[in-house]
Amino acid sequence: MLEYIPYGKTGYFNQLVTDFLAEHPQIRPFYTYSPVHPDFAAAIQARQNFDTPRTALVAALEAQYAALESVKAVKDNIAALLQPTTFTVCTAHQPNIFTGYLYFAYKILQTIKLCTTLKQEFPQHNFVPVYYMGSEDADLEELGSIYLDGKTLTWNTPQQGAVGRMQPEGLEVMLAEIKKGLGYAPHAEELMALLQKAYLEHKNIQEATLYLVDALFGRFGLVVLVPDSPALKRLYLPVIKDELFHQASHAIVNDTLEKLTTHYKMQANPREINLFYLQDGMRERIVQEGDQWKVLHTSLTFTAASLEAELEAHPERFSPNVILRGMFQETILPNIAFIGGGGEIAYWLELQQLFAHYKVPFPILLLRNSLLLTDEVSRQRMHKLGITTAELFKTTEDIVNDYVKQHTNASLVLKDEYAAIEHLFDALEEKARSIDITLVATTGSERKKALKSIGKLEHKFLRAEKKKFAWQTDQIRQIKNKLFPAGSLQERKENLLPWYAAEGPAFFDRVLAAITPVTDQFTVLDVPNE
Image 1 (spheres, rainbow, N blue to C red):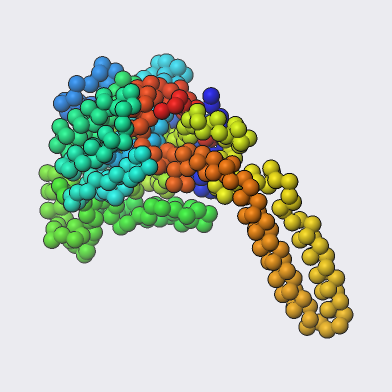
Image 2 (image 1 turned 180 degrees about the vertical axis):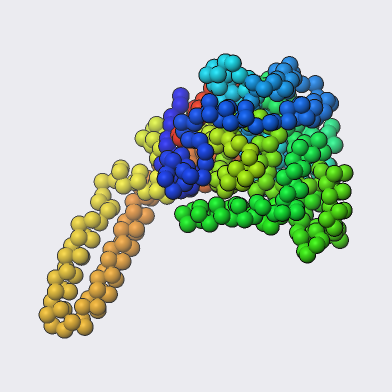
């Protein structure tokens, strides 16, 4: 069974996201295509007019996949990218260990589903789903933990720099914890074997992630692109050089940012140079000081000539930050649509003018699907209590309070009493005004105290009444903790491993069937008991 709730009514999405989906006039100028009724034909046309480096792209992908025994669907899709009638739909995500959060799978499955839908709409074209791995991200604190069985498991490693380049040493400890957490679920054994092969038999995290994602999603034809590649970075050298020597992006994006920040709090701020210098164990910003370029927190410095020589010899050492990453992706892929979360959409909205400056087609931006997976036990409890799915999105205390107010025989909301106080003090204020105008302020102060006292009584009445509903309120808390762990959306906290251990590949098929590639609705999906 499926239920849908508008994103704006869940309370878990900010104003920027809801305005983006509503195509609010104050945000609409910052993206090219409607996110709910996108013109795919126009996006395809724009991409056809751009010279995508297909031969170099396919050669780089074939090199990345050389050590993998990929299924035919993946090989066919890589080969198809040589054809001018083939386009990609892309999602991007860092190589979180053990896949990180549930929404990692949702983004990929939505990308796959959209390609299937587009093929039906445009049979003369081919559409390849791509997972662009943000392997140069250095935020180990974010990428190195998973939440499983009510606990946060963390990879303790002293390594620094790009997480994708880190060696997967010390992960045996986490694997043992995961095995314990998955228990004897029907598919736990095969999943553990897959995780051990991925993380214990590959030299770094990006290769482990490539193997794991290919093993999980390869049957759908998903192509994984690892941008940490000399061949792919070479395709972006004109922009990298321009950034280092002319720094155009800073002024362009700042101009957009000034307009956006009058309405929204934005999270990505451009720097003078939006590039990092990347080596194993190190990822540091590049800054220009006079006629020299320095790598912060290191002794590395370059002149214009030595910097140009470094670029030509080692393009892989230059890593675009969030401002330049999207355009790198769109330069090397024949991409027409990008699927991202709210945070990603926010920074993409800063980039349209930068794309125009470099004459790169701006893709259709689509908000990724959000899903809540509900289990049978929780559904039975909700039915017994008479709680709807939409109500679950309120805070636990609001749900409990509403339940008690609906089912109590006592009058807990003191509306009449508030009205009586207001009426009494209106009369007292009138009397005060006739005696001495200075007494009006004193009367007003006493009114506030009286209303505050009524509020305290109302709170105490509710608290006392809750005790009569102890069983029901406990059930509500259990449901809420199960479906919204730590008060968060399930997809932003839980890992997919226990779901996959319970159902195996059928879990992805179930989610894939529930996904709507283009939507402004949050999806609630019933799944079998774990």
